[in-house]
Image (tube, rainbow, N blue to C red):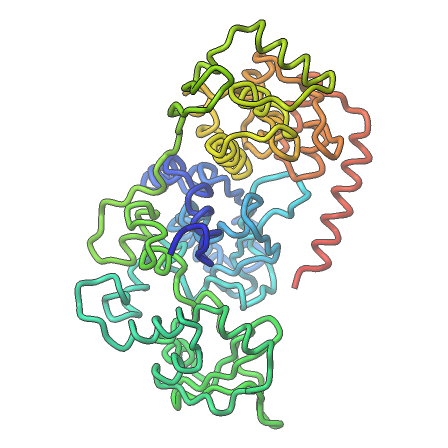
Length: 488
């Protein structure tokens, strides 16, 4: 199954860009040194937890328990598992994610709203949380002490990832892969005759959810009640973990049972990525790889990717190899082609399409450059400043312009500390007030698209035009309010 056609292709892209290797190394080093605040800073996770206030309002024992969770939090691991909540990913759910419950409140992580500046994730000790999106039953996804829980729940081996002969668990997953979800549930030992057989929504939800059927009954029993509830965004499943019965309708006198978090009832996405060949174990976060295969200690995280290898294009005078040094044509020829195109002449071809198309989104680039441009833009959206610097050091032409007419000055607005890159790009001749397809300068784009406070200040301090910024800020605030009101 190729990365382009797999339903997990989006997750593969997230795994490639969202949590870089340097971040894992920096956060891990600080965590192991006992500096949990420094570890959070390295993973771009803000800590908005006042332990003194927690102790005052809820007692020293509660504050001590919260601090203990924070000391053992692996923020890079948390970011890894919440990568779909980050602005560079395909989806964004702005609701808080519950990490642990304590008398008087919950330790939660809150994703930044798309149109508000600030860090990507914020840790808070707050009130009610939606249990559907909690990781409180999956502490292996953020607590460094509990990474072995995943294998323990599966009896020491994950299906398809050990040398043991294939058994029922592998057969169940194979049925799910084939879209035969009813057969998979029955093979896993569940009685599903009470399910609504005429609900298109149920069919859709059941086929789309990667249920971990080998541990689902145990998860339902953990609540200590005869039944547990799974909320599938419009359809609810009532799971009897003792009798292994599943139904969609409750008895009229039935109490609402506890809700199982979706993370607890789904297979880990990394399990599917590895078994389907989308990523290798060694490309995973080290703690994730070790949690999936006992003793696996060679994973380092995503491979740093800087590819400036030469490629060949067919030009008017033959085939030319193009590398980091640019196209093999004298400056006067390049200026002539640029002038002809600007005056309404034919679209550039060959080497000139490479040079002009890199700066003008209306000129089609060769596939290798479109992929290179997309990779750089994705790294920027996840705030990976070191990766952008590495690309520039390797010879990347800084005058990149995306299909939306975003320049690198637009793209660096999500960096936690963009000052050095901003100075470098301005020195290379980039226009600080260049406008994208919507007419937004980098400063206005930073305000409306949730750029970091550091980026907004750096652009303003470097002389960016501030005209209209108050209107842009007001628009961003209104969008953030709408997102907040729409939060489940």
